[in-house]
Amino acid sequence: MRIAVFSTKRYDREALERANRSHGHVISYFEPRLTSETVVLARGYDAVCPFVNDQVTAPVIAALAEGGARLLTLRSAGFNHVDLRAAHEHDVVVTRVPAYSPHAVAEHAAGIILTLNRKLHRAYARVREGNFSLDGLLGFDLRGRTVGVAGTGKIGTVFCRIMAGFGCRVVAHDPYPSDEVRELGVEYVELGALFERSDIIALHLPLTPETHHLVDAEAIERMKKGVMLINTSRGGLVDTRAMIDGLKSGKVGALGLDVYEEEADLFFEDLSGTVIQDDVFARLLTFPNVFITGHQGFFTREALDNIAGTVLANASAFEKGDGDLHVVTLEEVRGRS
Ligand code: NAI
Image 1 (cartoon, rainbow, N blue to C red):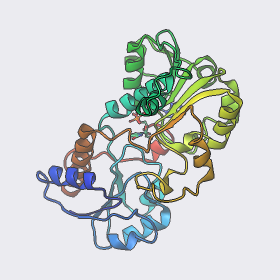
Image 2 (image 1 turned 45 degrees about the vertical axis):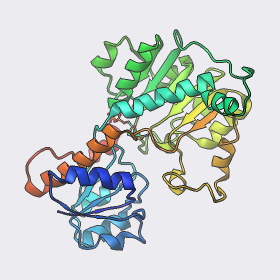
Image 3 (image 1 turned 90 degrees about the vertical axis):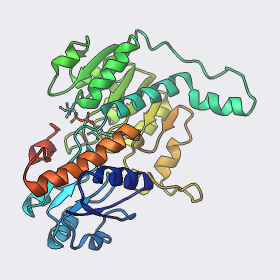
Image 4 (image 1 turned 120 degrees about the vertical axis):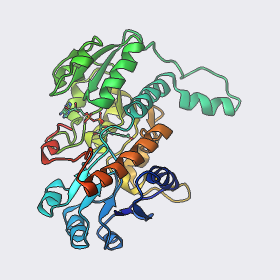
């Protein structure tokens, strides 16, 4: 197939080239994001491969279909950036990479917890400045703490196992509870109870119209004073302004983010020489108890190779009408992915 890859970085290209040795597709790499301005680049391609911050909106899908594209082979697990209804209307099949390394994201979430709890980000800077004072670096034992996991799919399950390994009490919420998770000793509870009981809350559920701003002012109000919240899923799950109020009042004791509501204008680019225009994001950066990474949860060697392999295997399966095709269906928009 002729495949147009958008938002390409060097590491994407290298992984896709390695994987393509066993597929033989004709791949063109475009650095810009897929938007209504850049969609013209995809004209004449059979398949398009977007990334998480590409704008795969209804007009973009209409233009892709008009230009001959029949397949959107997403190189992500999440698909909230795609208008699935429009894809359905234009007979464009959407596939994703359902599991490339749940360990990558779950381990990153655990790393953020350790960083925030033991203030490793501050300790690193201090020691380099020759400041060996421990004032302000006091943490707590994870053992015995209650960790609330919202979403126990592939990533949430691995995360539950990691936190159980630290000796934490793990409670979870998911409309589809899993026996595998129960066997780890995890207790399923309602979302409200999860908010009320947890010392640390981690989000591992997809962003859908129903889960948008799942963590809002009301949810924060129900949480324990000093709660730590970790979001490695999608920025839109958290109302950032409400979170800033929670941080200012001390209700939220620590915030760890790998994703941000308005990340599309920031993440994956080197903006170190420019002035950040997003005042909400800039405010987040001023808190000593906020730790942010730029959507790097997925970024391990194993994950990149699995992503590239599945993206191209989806294209091959679509082309040949044979093999595993990981189609995203409209059902999944309703939250079961
Ligand atoms: P998954 O599809 O295996 O699991 C998602 C789980 O969330 C399912 O068990 C589902 O039943 C549950 N869920 C749906 N609605 C819910 C609700 N209202 N409350 C509680 N649970 C709900 O997905 P996976 O692979 O575990 O990924 C989770 C999310 O992580 C993805 O949707 C994606 O947004 C994000 N992600 C982030 C990455 C990063 O680099 N930071 C990389 C990969 C995924």
